[in-house]
Image (cartoon, rainbow over all chains, first blue to last red; front, side, top):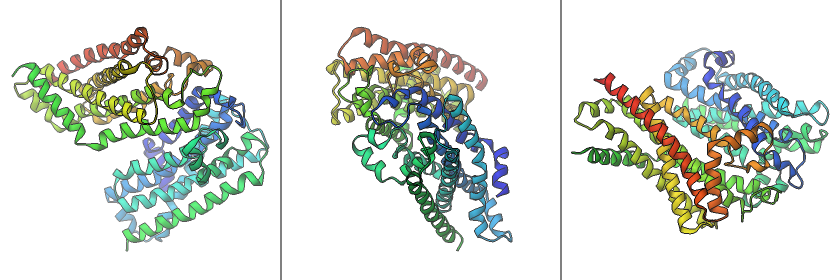
Length: 244
Length: 258
């Protein structure tokens, strides 16, 4: 876990995109799509109250995916073999990097949220809204951490990097990332309605759109809990196949 | 063999090189189409907002942006092949051979233009299947293909200059986010009439906006010679700069190799 946290300063190139990309999203989406708040049924008139939490989640999810990228690098360089020979419990090789990523994700959350606040994003409801955003972001880091860890054990190559990143990108954008369900049309509405990521986005945004209510939170919490357990099982299974 | 024959042979090699590597051209087709489908479904209702250009659908609005995006991304990938040649040592073998120096550059650029126009045709076919009608008719469609080829030439020439300067695939690929950011800070994905503040100012001054607005008018309104010339003027300006830079860098690298 400590090694994973220290990677922030050791390999900044693996960390910086999880900050730069979401900040760019805030600038680009907030600037280009500011008029979409005029759409009927749009829940806020401050566009960054909508895009800010989404950008935070995007950064956290990308940071989660660095767990898999770092592991494939360790596998290719042979460092992972040395880890396997070390007298450490095997489960720590699964939980350690993900726990490290969860700690590391606090920095992009802080930076991206500051950028959103400078652009005008504000909590509308109580401070509990900040907690729900934090839970959603941290949960997503763990979920994608385990998912990409599983992919790393399966493919054992940095060539799997696009697969890891595209999974993050597509799962978020095929949800209510850009507009609420009511404003969507066609196929995207059908997909976003059943995509659990829409619930996670609702959990992240709830404090920026109104008062925090259990009704707006439970779906996201459930999606994160089930998703994290399933991806952790996937990672454990791939690990057992790689290291019989 | 003449310079033209050398350029033709190298251009053929460049085209084959891209076609044989699906991982180079598939993302430059897939992602723009994915964005077009996504934005059409997500932002489709925005066409009813006051100030939005009159369009049959958001997909019609997205056609020029998708085409330019695809050709630009394809161009970045294709121009990194120049750097690949330098890294692999093939460039030095070309220099050692009795090859006309300028044909090395011309071959690459001709290949990029061909691939750009091919991409533009594919985008037009796909959008037409999904019901988009170019109001400027066949002339407008041909103009879109021509501008696609010019855009590929422009990004190809700038990318070649970078590749010749750095000799690094990574450095050329590093230009990808810059291209994406420049495109986003324009009218590509939403009309500037509905933007606000500094973003609107930047987007209105962005040369990509002039080009995309010109193409967009051909798609949404009909043929206009002025729009057509403006849309082609931007890539032609970039080509002039890119070719100048490339020739300088080519001369520098040839001198170093010699």
